[in-house]
Amino acid sequence: MIEIERKFLVNSDVYKSEAFKQSRIVQGFLNTDKERTVRVRIQADKGFLTIKGKSSSNGLSRFEWETEISIIEAEDLLKICEKGVIEKIRYEVKVGNHIFEVDEFDGNNQGLVIAEIELSKETEIYEKPNWLGEEVTGDIRYYNAQLSKQPYKTW
Image (cartoon, rainbow, N blue to C red; front, side):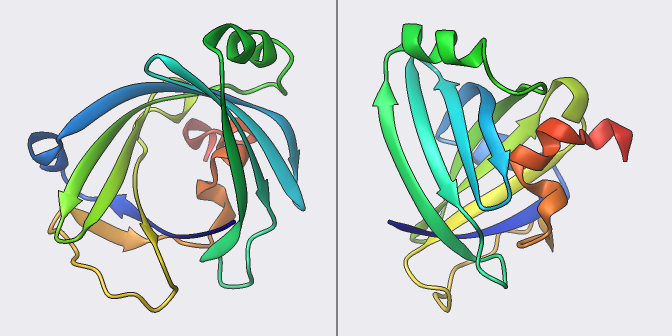
């Protein structure tokens, strides 16, 4: 499966009042090779294992495969992940026909807030809310796998 996604910085906290859902996420990486990453995630009461391929040259798309695993399996896998666990609160906000996932990072990435939108094609039109800031799609500093190695607080 191919994931097509755009990432943006966020310039205000208005998204919080517009969110229809919020959940806590803890995730780690079993592998952060630039050709592929393997992520373990606990989101709310579910566990997930995700494999992502190398991004396209413009950073908009890449292979993604994900499966649900038990919380116990996810907790066990988190214990053997590479150093640098990511902690964040995710807010889901419906804007027009799309849902923005706004991640408010905690821990060593505290202060960073990123909004992502998944699209069905790279040229798809979408509505931009007024709290959306600079686009950072393709900037590897904002990839979670990179944030686990070089946290926002160290920039």
